Image (cartoon, rainbow, N blue to C red; front, top):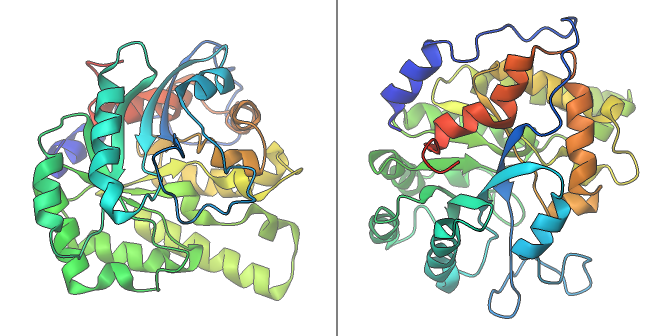
Length: 322
């Protein structure tokens, strides 16, 4: 979906109820359709994940059968999210998940694949991706060893603008302190659709400590999320927050982060992401689903459907595959 179409659909008011925390409780149906826009899968027999430590609990295969077990009892379709494989494996990763998305017996229906904006050969890579309608976007993780400001380098910006020309989105997976860079990138790339991953990677534990440092970081994150929400070609993925709170995965702990994102972006510009299996650093996927249901339980049922599925179907163009 091109930017103008996306904005027109948003303006049409598909999920127009105000996000009101004090609204009457509308319990979400147990078997509601869920579009999980952040499904990781990896098979270490052929994929190389340099970021994954050998002693990590995640240093094993996580494949479709495991995901089906993790989502048992739910009606889930998934958008695969790239897993930061080595550069020479990105085309193989894309081809693998395209084939996975074409398998009607699997829950995966589309993919956001890895890419290296700004590097030589990126335009050819995007042309390669454009042959696959199952590929909806590209992501490069911008935290970790990647320096602040990387996404504002001229070659990087040009690459992200190219994604918009090819009707592909770009995921902003960055440090909470770098969201301001995302604002600048989105403004420079008005025809590219952007997704802020993981609520902007704000640590919910900061809200439990009233130290001056935490209050300062919270205030900056809130300002930057609101500023990004003011850029019309952006949406926010409600995901990732549970991974940083092992043993503390409750609605009370996660609600401040989730609610600020919901209120900043509004009911039409938020999507759900499971972040499985990375979520296991904090709690099982079933716990994340349960906690998020509790957080949004007092919001109108229409808004809940928008978050769980309707917005993702529209944003990723999934109407014909779910």
